[in-house]
Amino acid sequence: AQKVTQAQTEISVVEKEDVTLDCVYETRDTTYYLFWYKQPPSGELVFLIRRNSFDEQNEISGRYSWNFQKSTSSFNFTITASQVVDSAVYFCALSETGSARQLTFGSGTQLTVLP
Amino acid sequence: KAGVTQTPRYLIKTRGQQVTLSCSPISGHRSVSWYQQTPGQGLQFLFEYFSETQRNKGNFPGRFSGRQFSNSRSEMNVSTLELGDSALYLCASSWGGRGNTEAFFGQGTRLTVV
Image 1: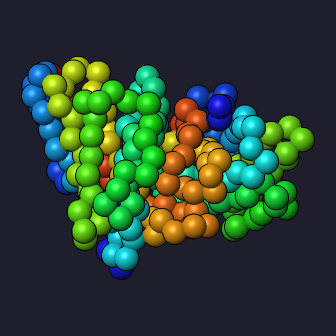
Image 2: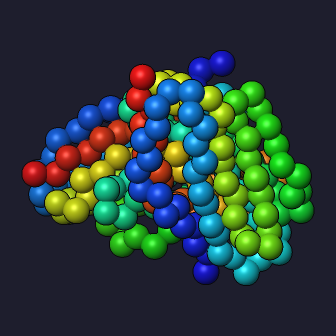
């Protein structure tokens, strides 16, 4: 069985602070994909990143960075110099089949960035 | 390029009724997946349709069903509604071929059962 745990239910930071969202996963497969999605108040899930199990290289995209560590089954997400527009619910998700069509989601982390 | 369109955006139904939700995927995408989002259970996979066939199914009762048309548009039906079916229903569109790993989500249909 697969499982994704986001232990942080809510996080509040002040604008320009850095913040890290934690994600821990469980899977028996050797090939799998990990995702991060952002859900603003409008409701749609916005794709942020996809990483496969064979690629442990960290990735940086602007103010966003991701740290994937298979040894600890973690795929953490850091926002540098947070902005009010970053306020949203962030979901980590796992796909065992390599497909984003059948995702197992974590419970989400509500991030609030205060001005 | 138009995004994923879900209709209606909001619905209020009475317990015991049935409801049909619609999802129009991105042009060229052949896979549509449905998810239920509730405060208690979070985001849960319902089922996926590809080329008019159900390809995967989550752990939901038979009251939840779906179908896909030849133009890839998909409908989801819930019969004999229960209060617990109140949720945001999201659909995701993807190309659906082997190796494709990105899905684009619609804004969802918020269903309230009273």
